[in-house]
Amino acid sequence: MKKLLILLLCLSLPVSCSPRQPPPEEDPPHFTVIGVSQVGSESGFRVANTESMRSVFTEEAGYRLLFDDARQKQENQIAAIRKFIQQRADYILLMPLCVSGWDSVLQEAREAGIPVILVDRTIETADESLYAAHVGADFQWEGEQAAAWLENAFQGAKGPVNILHIQGTLGSSAQLGRSAALEQAVEAHENWNLLAQLDGDFTQAKSYEETAQWLDSQAGPPVLHAVYCENDSAAFGAIQALEERGYSCGAEGVRIVSFDATRQGLTYCLEGRISLEVECDPMMGPLVEEVIRTLQSGSTPDKHYYTQEQLFTPEDLSRALIDRRPY
Ligand code: GZL
Ligand code: ZN
Image 1 (cartoon, rainbow, N blue to C red):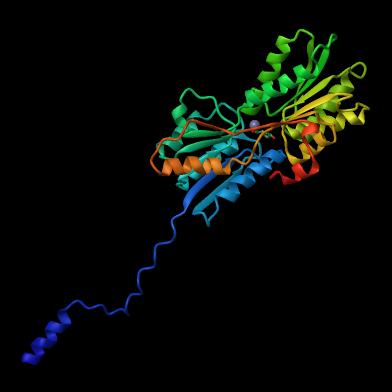
Image 2: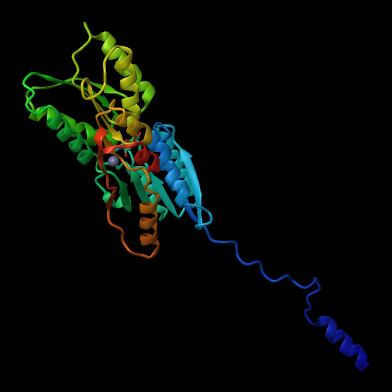
């Protein structure tokens, strides 16, 4: 009887009948998920800017990058931000194509508790709390450097200084800043004539097309003293259209000023075809990571982190210097 009782007792005890559980998997590494909404791949600057993000936010460094190329359309950027919210990104990097139309989607990101960092370009909003920080350039400052160089180049010119203006993507903060600087300088010099403002959309193809069409639409070949190109891609397109029509670009001919200072732009400058390059540094990955680290530590980052930039003229350049540059 006693044996029966003991047997019944054993049977009633809870026992694990499955084989021994393996030790709990160490939990998968925690990645910081970064959603990146990039403008597109319209220029050498943009390609380098993307490369800078990819080289900083690697899996080895503990990041998972969700990357979207908006192909120059704001609605694609808005859709990408909504996707990053659904994917519960930890941070969103936005390179905003243009300055307006962001408030509602940035409110959705704020409601989801996801900090947004503006990279490269910035936005116009009444509510600056919609973004944690902006890392990029001061485009008005860049334009003012170019305008000051033109002022110096045409110092004491008695007759008219005829300027052709090839603008970047209309409504982008880069175009607005660089255009405002030129327009203010034209206002300040009564002998400067802004012959035309063409929309080159920051691409070589559109800038070439617009410049060629404008030149061919004039009664005779216009007398040009300077072409203000709002990025290197625009300069390459404008120079191609000008040289095809017999213009010489350089100190003895049409002064071309350009922005970005990509290796190709600096090569044109070394050759003298571009007279002034205003650098626009795309390598913002490390600065953006600094902002993320500040946020992760619970501190409040500065609102603006400006890239440091320099100017180049042919005399400043050598092949070796250009080859050493990262983009
Ligand atoms: C400026 C950037 C501009 C570049 C162009 O920081 O937004 O956009 O100057 C690019 O090359 O298209
Ligand atoms: Zn810049």
